[in-house]
Image (cartoon, rainbow, N blue to C red; front, side, top):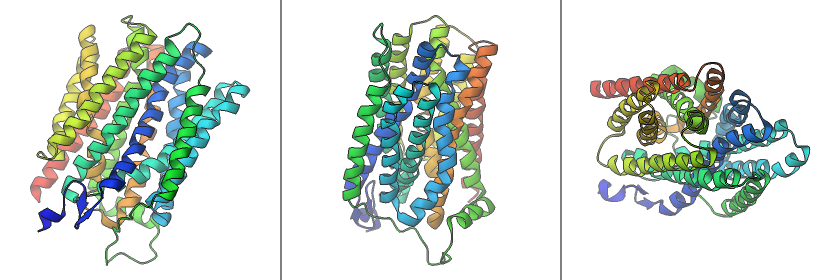
Length: 407
């Protein structure tokens, strides 16, 4: 009877297909917003004649918003629920995008950085609400598969952004203005905010009978660190992933153009192909994890990423490029898989745990270190940074499997 009541989109006999589809649209939006940064990085280098290190402030500023707003976002969602968290995040996202209009009149790099910081704060609310919410919209045993499916549309948004915005910036002699894409994006996001404000989303009650009444989100956070060591390890593994994934995406065009393999326009297309591998990896991973445990998949993919980046560091010419592309396929399932595994068994602590996990995109600041190393050494050495991140994930996967085996 229980197997009939539960499934990929059913829990306790209730179907959550409609809220799943609605929330999954958000994954496309923030995938698009984050991928634009990888194109914007090279665009500002060309337009403002700045170094890789200087342009990395784009990533630093945006992902600093995640670090500063993740816990406030978690506290907000704990008090007001998932739907209001989504709407508030969309409003910040849309406002930050539209502020590119006055930012263009100011005409300074710092003005655009302020806009990106506001966008980063908005994305933090969206991701803090949507990621754990998706894990609850069905049977607990299919949570990892469900989150990977939603995150696949994150990859679709990234793919569309790098191709469309890359062509807009790099396909003409007179490079396009950053104002147009952000104005369109801001208007669209605010429209979606209005829709979510009027569409009720069911709140999933995760509290237990033993939950202390009046417990604050900060008390939950203290409990997570004191009593859930595997969650803490998962938190650091997710941070390591964000350092690796965001840094590689941000560095990609600089790397392939600096090696003399292609120009900016072609590089943006190749990055789009890389993100297509990433998206396919998530769809394939989501399907496989209906039959194979997330722990096993994470271990296999961690080995794949360590091997891939090791080949890049060996500086084997075009083979290094192919290894870098293969890395996108292997890393695809890592974020949703680590995220959902870290939340297993947390119950009433899930929202607070999610807010901590959503601090991890601050790992995008790792691109600052990659840029600094590239400006002062060569284009290959910076890949030591993502390699270290993937090794941490590999160790996490091994420890997780060992911990489960002991139960």
